Length: 474
Image (tube, rainbow, N blue to C red; front, side, top):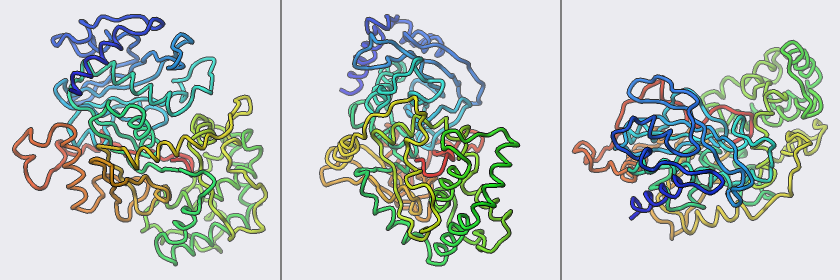
């Protein structure tokens, strides 16, 4: 039934809306036509470039999307996607980071596990996938989910086997929202390290996380160096300003190097647990180290470039969404009393350019997603890291969830994945994913009690599910 529905959806997209034109369904679906020609026969699809990669064909493409899916006649923009093509008879993984698009060939963990094709999408309003002029009110989770739905329906006439959506962090959030609004598109979803900020003004779960993560000794060392970073603020900011001047960085968004530095100091402990392993607690310096050493530690953990305009500006679409729908975490810092100068400096509005209006925060958006996941989700895997701060507010599943599973990778940070789960969990998650992709009994070797990824790891092609981004960004 679902396969038949996909052909209907593909046909609808191929004939197009009145504003987007029509396409030749025959050219797009003819089995003997070269795969590039079949893809480019889809109305609104254009080739940016094809890059060589062993065992696949790899295309970077633009796909014409409505600025507003509710009112397509208002205009269109070009959204970048990529296709890592294996074969039309393999399952397809739909990947998004929730941010920009990697334009070099890469493979997500689910793609390797199921030995499939991979369609990757750049999230709307991340450059260059941004309308011009940009109506920022059209940047919301439903519009983005509708982008995915339209890409899926356009390609499902070519890739007509099973589909699984995935993403890490904000990409995991995006994959979840997509399933909420279009629950019948995918045969399964794997959401990695996806936070669930249900009530934006109630963030005590983060305080509890930081009070209990790792060992008391490690927490004490981090708290001491965090405080010292602000005790020596003047020395540190002097170095920061000189570095920025030498490198051509600016601080217009935050207003000054001092204000940007306070943000980074507040993010130090969060960034440590988001991206460092617990074993690196031994590398946390004593608070009395020379200032140069303290500065180097902060740069390594937080990244001073992420306080500059050049480091923050590419993420304006995320900050816009955080301030209007997604929410953002607020952590209590009594250990820093008397050292902070800029209350509320971490509010997303401070890093969204002032010429972009921001509507008031919609507190209903995440509550709706949370309720759907808890009561109605199906065929979903949530993979979280034990030591990841974003796990403080995870998705949860109630008794009516159907084939939805939540796993926690022991000791893992924001890079948690299926491979890092405990053995029983890893085997169960792998078996479930293979089943959703229609691969559980395709080969005799898959009938064993120990299912494995269908293709071996390739360090050049297999990339982490989450790239390092500014601190406290999912």
